[in-house]
Image (tube, rainbow, N blue to C red; front, side, top):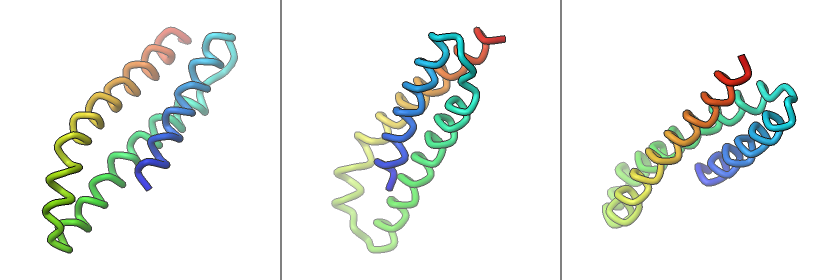
Length: 90
């Protein structure tokens, strides 16, 4: 599920930038992008919780280290990009 939210956040971010570049109102896409980014992180940790309950340590060891770093980077990019378009539009 977190992959779906992540792809949706990237699409919304792209639409936000497209609307921003054409001087159209991109507020809804900014909101959707940040919301889906938050849902991506929450969904990822919910999946990890399921693996802990099932004691699937190999899945945790395979996925969490790499995805943790990727999520930090993608969340930072999402915040910066959406923040820049918000500040520049004011």
